[in-house]
Image 1 (cartoon, rainbow, N blue to C red):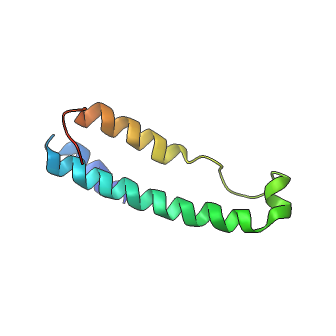
Image 2 (image 1 turned 180 degrees about the vertical axis):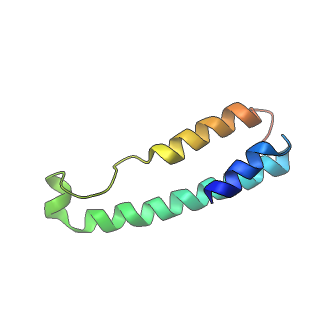
Length: 77
């Protein structure tokens, strides 16, 4: 998915590109939700901050920031 997003960033700046990037971000968010829900299942590790997962996904946040900057507010997905 990361390569798809990068390819879209290098392409045109239109609504279709914004929709494709939004779709890929949604996919990344869904995958992250599965990982975090699985990590939260083990309450002992979760509440002791010993679970081997990032609580926030910086990749998703950074891609969303770059998409907003690159595609701008004029494009809505």
